[in-house]
Amino acid sequence: MAKKYKRGFTVGTFDMFHIGHLNLVKQAKEYCDYLIVGIHSDEWVMHCKNRPTVINYEDRAAIVAAIRYVDEVVKNETRSKMEAWEKYHFDVAFIGDDWKGTEVWNKIEAELKSVGCDVVYIPYTKGISTTQIREKLKDASTTKIENK
Image (tube, rainbow, N blue to C red; front, side, top):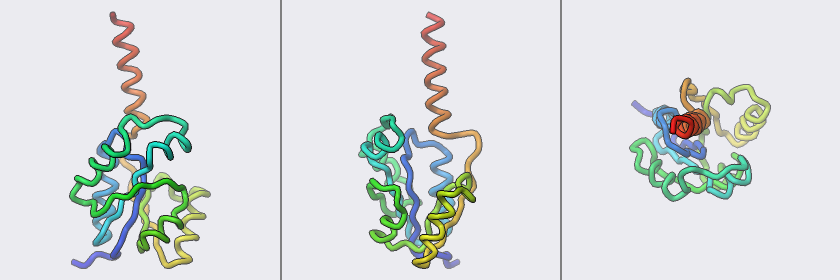
């Protein structure tokens, strides 16, 4: 069966890779022949999220590149999806559906539409996020210290 799109693009930090990340790339690949995954650089994460990554860029990129649904990994150092589109000329961008209807993504969707690029919202995997993993690790280390 032919896929709806030729080239797809998604972007993220993919720190502490988990099932939500896997679900995103797997479902995105179901829509397109060739999936490009942008990985935020360590510097970008520090600048935009004001915190370091747990896993460095090279290792995160290697993990994502090893996934069979991913055709290409690229370093991302911008918030602009139009800059990414100008570099990679994808015909669809993928993002979690927790962003659907937000002011930010309504604007991005309109920009991409102006160049013939669609946005597909992938169902967010409930119950897991890198933030939740960070909190569990923090709680576990606090509990361990308290029990000594």
